[in-house]
Image 1 (tube, rainbow, N blue to C red):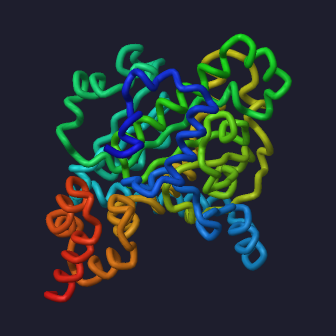
Image 2: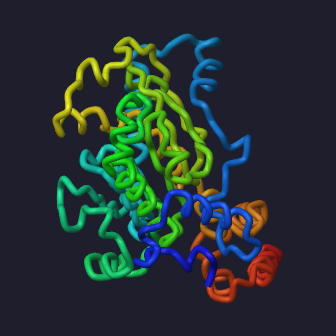
Length: 351
């Protein structure tokens, strides 16, 4: 049993303190016998600030007209819908946490993935992330019949973390709201560790979530106007995914519209402020779906192996299911990476 498995989703670990969880994350990163790389910090060349990509584009081309950007986002949506017709994604599941609007996960659903959304506003029983555990997923979902959990997406509630509410931090820290919010992040991380998806991402506006919840450094920074929605709201993503999203850069003519148009404390206005921008949702899908990004899908599944070797296997015509048949037992059950890579090389040589 790995160090990660020792705490995954088991009740005795649900009350870990912030420092305790951060310490465990550090142990994971340093452990020599760890059997996955889910929580590894991104390399410097994997960190993307979409503002830099947009700056290079606009220097040569200027801002896109809204109609042009709309057409680009629509083309991404058409691409997702075309995947649905192939039925290639039917065996893949996306878990989308804190997903009342369904916006972030919609492209995956349109592409034929089985999307399971969790939000306590929609279902207090099955939508409560605090209830997650081994028995929860087994009793309610049959542990998804052993199908591949390809991605876990989580737009964790940001109210207790966002820098925009810094003046209220002391009160929230004192009355337990911050601790409760951190626990939701920890529950998300436990779920990710349990299912070990190829892609996982936690989204939040600029906030103190990374420090308080023990997350690895962020991987992506963007504003909605980088992907066709003409307003600003600097947002960060942590996780394991391809951060090099396509862009549809438009001028931020609506400025920072969130609090101007959706001010107030009601649940409805909070939901409006937290809705995932449509352009980002489709851009993230384009950069991370399994069909268009087979190396990412396979290399993250077998993340202890040489990713270049897995790329060569795919280029040689060995499909994802073929790779699974060759190495899954050695990799997951025997934890024998040498045998897994040997089997891959032998198969490549036979092609």
